[in-house]
Length: 210
Image 1 (tube, one colour):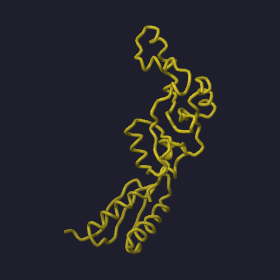
Image 2 (cartoon, helix red, strand yellow):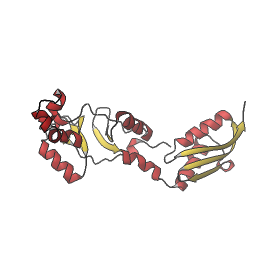
Image 3 (cartoon, helix red, strand yellow):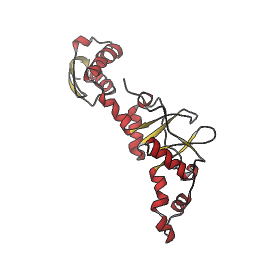
Image 4 (cartoon, one colour):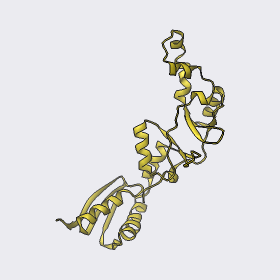
């Protein structure tokens, strides 16, 4: 079925406290090979995200500050010395029970490359990046076809999987076979589209049209 954020997220998350200093943040980024990480408050809640872009404001805008052309917000960030002052807030987060599609839509609409994964109490449990989301499409075709037959056709719709032909090539599913009604056919195709690793679905089903 549809992959969840909890299926693809990284659980060992690099994070810092609000009081972490500029130089320490840079060292952690370089040592751990990350370009951004969540910022936690004293109660372990995610309150923001600090990224390379946030850190580069100081270096990139020094000349502008000298000439007095910085906006107030940029001037404050250029002068910041701790994660709590440097970070972008509020943090754009997602829950572990959200689908991979939900995460992709959030990243696209908010123009972010990664999302801290939090519980309802804003406690950090993981982080998910664009490459994590794309990983669901690396699933073997045989595995995708097997799930469609056993969990969707037989399990969810109580139909005979032997009555259908499911052909999967590089994640593209071609479905053929008899569906009693157009409504059932559309529902079946929609369920197949939700299977992890499915890139597209081609409809070759036969059914009565009313």
